[in-house]
Length: 168
Image 1 (cartoon, helix red, strand yellow):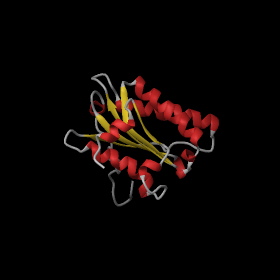
Image 2 (cartoon, one colour; image 1 turned 90 degrees about the vertical axis):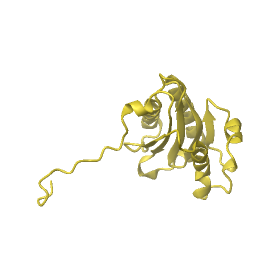
Image 3 (cartoon, one colour; image 1 turned 60 degrees about the vertical axis):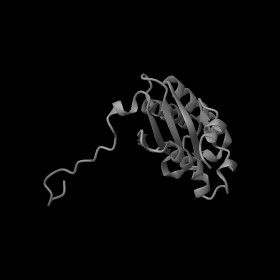
Image 4 (cartoon, helix red, strand yellow; image 1 turned 30 degrees about the vertical axis):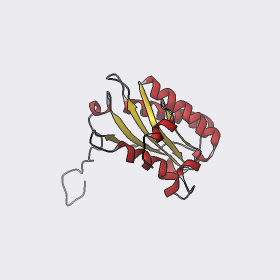
């Protein structure tokens, strides 16, 4: 407590209630590597993590219309397929499994404690969010066009079909 402020400072709750992450919902997530270590410049690591992400999504009855591994963080939009789906739980599971893999294989590297998530509401434009994810490597100056970036994709969707529904 601050001597002039007798009341303890309360941290603001940054999460929506869990019921907002269950069922047929769509959510955007950003998971960052601690100290901005560029672990996702290694194609082997990206392949291993993509497999883990797919398994975690499938276990929670979810899919990802788009994901993009940037050098030091991951963007993914996840969707629940039915009323039993849990998009938040799928990313927590992925983060735990991949964190354990990092501990074993890249012990100098780990995830940041929390991650950013945003439930996409029905009125929001999912297309613009997919394009935002895909344009991250362009904004970062890694490629001239997002199509050139190798560490993007979709899980449970064909990326070409997802992109075909997105105006360019």
